[in-house]
Length: 210
Image (cartoon, rainbow, N blue to C red; front, top):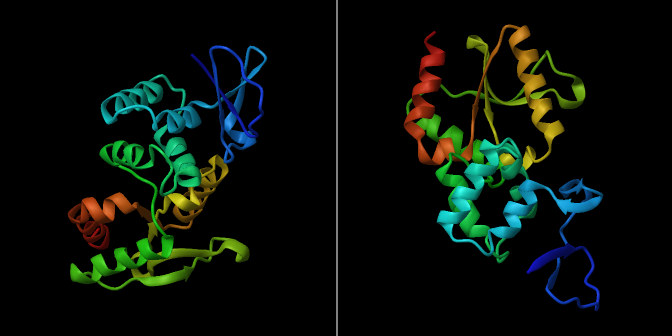
């Protein structure tokens, strides 16, 4: 059975062809192979999540990443864009990605507050929120948290704001600018804060004492 994905469902029917409508399919999720439009590897995985069990889906993710066809960052970013409650396969793919150290994050301010709460419960000094970093441009000149006396930046790395490749590169550029200005940057994801808080606390504590 050949599966064809289209943004608009047409009434035409063809023997041996399963035509499926995807209203959330955008141009950047389409690639061209041998003159034919096909979904990108990341989008294909997300669509197949509705039809594969966790075990087969896990193997598919691992194989596709190992072949260099996509990355966990790309897959997570796209999942944050199109994954939603009620979409077939969403919970299954979330489980697979959580097992690999990540899952699309919730609201970034919520993650930031949870990181602050973790810091306070660990007895660490309170960082400055929304610190205006002098090395950044005025239009985007803030970082999530900062220990000014230690020249240390903490970023609550929410996937929702890192769904495109250019945003991922922008973050790396911001980190480089911080390091050139003599600052260090630590990034923590939702998975870090929720699944391994000891690691987060230990890392921050170490950075504050070195």
